[in-house]
Amino acid sequence: MEKFTKLSGVAAPMPLVNIDTDMIIPKQYLKTIQRAGLGDKLFAEMRYNNDGSEREDFVLNQSAYRGAQILVAGDNFGCGSSREHAPWALADFGIRCVISTAFADIFYNNCFKNSILPIQVSAKDLEKLMDDASRGSNATLSIDLPAQEIKGPDGGTLSFELDPFRKHCLLNGLDDIGLTLEKTEKVDSFEALQKLSQPWLQK
Image (cartoon, rainbow, N blue to C red; front, side):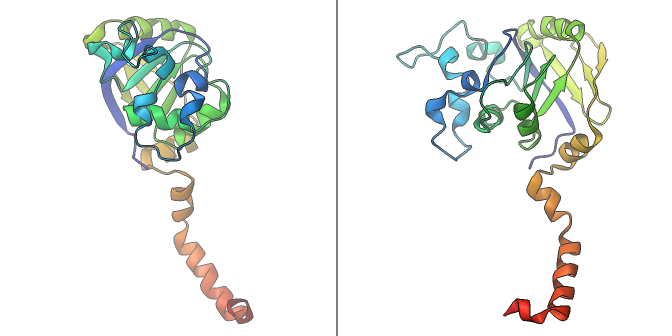
């Protein structure tokens, strides 16, 4: 998994509350288990017209935000069904960080397994960040995970809280498999000892 340490990028404002996983990646795109290509389907029903053309009023279709790496979103982001395709689609589009006042638990957990940093802030801080993000291509935010800080385009800095274990996983690029592989030496040692003490299990 890709490590997350620091990120500076354009932040796209999405003030809508209760953005659920079906809005993030509609159900008709859940047949695949491939992560690549899902970025094109991200927010598909809000992003495209029925004929497949882009909706000019949707934020990620606007030239200033096409390369956005950060979303500043309304309350309760990622609610709804527990589909891992939602963070897959965000990551494939290029989103590495989502900032909101609250996240649905399952979506929040899935983000960390896909190298996406979900940051929870107060309503007051979100209002400030939403204003920053509304500045178009000048809406660059800087995320410093080691320091747990967000720096806005005006130089102002906000702090955020994060569980130390989740922080460790992101900084070191560790998903569930990576965490297991960290214990490879102990696993190998156990298996070698078991072969000596219980050789009949190897037959």
